[in-house]
Image 1 (cartoon, rainbow, N blue to C red):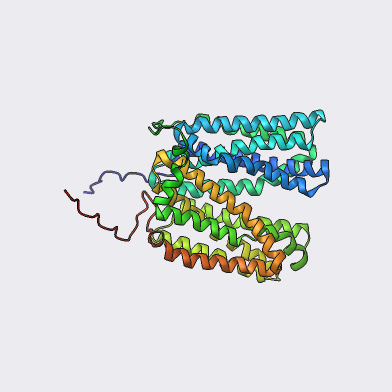
Image 2 (image 1 turned 30 degrees about the vertical axis):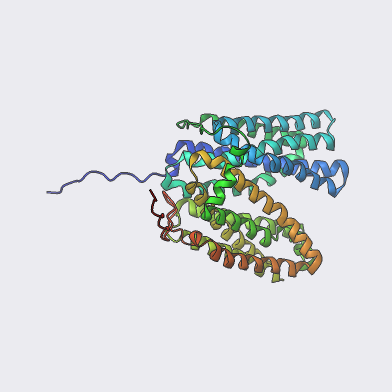
Length: 426
């Protein structure tokens, strides 16, 4: 006679978490809308003025509000319902996109109007980015967080690949059409956020003020593993970023045309997307800290290979590897930061993290341009890749607790023994 025991509990899956599915869709819609907006604004500004400087000013108009508001945004994300904050962000971005569409349709669009409305988009994104990062851990069980972060990253990479192409195709019907579609996507994003149903957390008891706004920075300083992970990513991207020089590589070194430049630009996103999809179903098991350092080292090595390559095929492979290794590092780092941070601090810590990432991306392009002017294009990229490898070696010595992080599922566990507290003196 066969005895049938109790059924083993089913392992939770991301698709079974309805709040996360809605969040993932919201992330895709919002990112595609942003990418389409970037294509339409860039093309329209250059058509209106014919000045390359104005393209840079578009980026500046988005960066400045993000830079100055990001710490305040973290405070808001920790003291108010994060879903409502995101809905207000989507409302503001939809209004800005609608304004661009109406001005374009009426023929009253100008660079001043575009800069003003893009500034509104930048201000809304300053609140959107840390709030989305802080909301994610509340949508899934802790054991699914690393997979959720990988799936969330895959949403971003999918949008980065599909959004510009979609925006370019729709632009054939005119910029107003692109802005109208972007508006609809922002509204749809707000609807997805509205449908998310989770238990509302209690706001922290800390009084609002400068001290609360800066608490995220103080928390990171007290957590060596978190500080090490965030700063490692910042310096690796700062030194190893070669994307700003891709047009020079495409034309002068690899001797290809605009189609080749498009392939080079998409390769990093394709590599990152592939790894993100894999990690969403096969989370990393054990030695997470060492794997993160190894991924950053591969990132630096791939940068050196790309810098030295004169073969188009080798360059494509190097960029694929670069994007894939960067995604491994991103998933581990974001999982670690979220698991090590209490929920009432996640908004402020995510804000600091966003500030580090934004700064490294902006300064990374600037660093690439300066070193290319000083030493030449190829030496600039190679020096950056070698610099990334040096950062990996130094950071492993400066932050041993980060290297000793073991598992990311459920809770990040540091394998080194914590120092014993001193005895109390009566």
